[in-house]
Image (cartoon, rainbow, N blue to C red; front, side, top):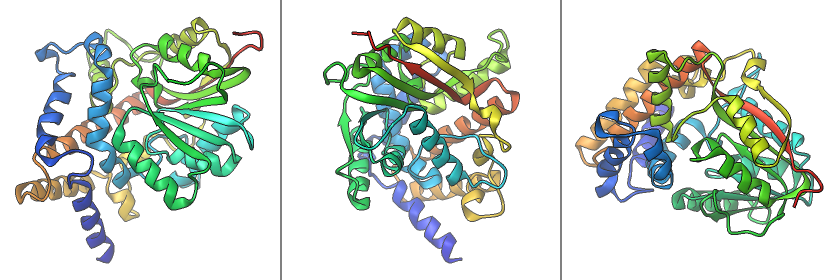
Length: 349
């Protein structure tokens, strides 16, 4: 019972006005959802034009919900038998750091760093200096506080900026990585070209990218509904296939060393945490009953004005996103674990 009461107290905290003034939550979620509603003229091209606004609104709305349900590393991972979700996330991050040859004393860029969970883990693991770029002020504030709490401010820092136009010189970093973040970019060649510019010649860029797999049929209405559900629920302008990603890397100047779906390497589906489990309170949150409980709690807190109006709409959006991700994963038409390793030639400018 003490765990449950603590969970309710935590839920009250996340729907309090932390990232947004409580008076604008309802307006913000409505504006965000309109960008994905075809009946209101929403298109992928319009989302690409307004990607900064969309991503900022999204993370203002959902960051506290993410930390409540997921922790500080906002990503998925292939999971092995007998491995916990937390261990799989950490291993996924360490694997990426290893593949880009990140070592002590090197300078790395984390593209789209969230609140810095992976950056802190990678800095612990490698003792490299990690700079995270992010355009969301609230996440930067959270990440900076968390860096201080764990004593990593000397290794991990943040830069609030548009990752399509980073205000740093050419050839600044010894290694660059992105974890499920460049899917927010409006232009794959644009984002990869900017990363190419920032990376030193003879160095590696590695990432996990969200893509539609070759099983996705663009003429299948059900597939397209799932795709739109993922895009709406996760603030994405337009999901593409892995082939498009690889070609964009090449068009940006990179040599592609490897590209494959690591989701196929796991024993437990990457989407398992979204399905939930009855074996623990943490797992219960993601079950249908757990979501029902959270939904009722949020609506109750909204009714008595502890939570701002619109909080229940945010929760509804995240549930639709989770359902779309699970369905996409079960059908094999979507993966968040498309790994690639790219190399900037030594003779590149």
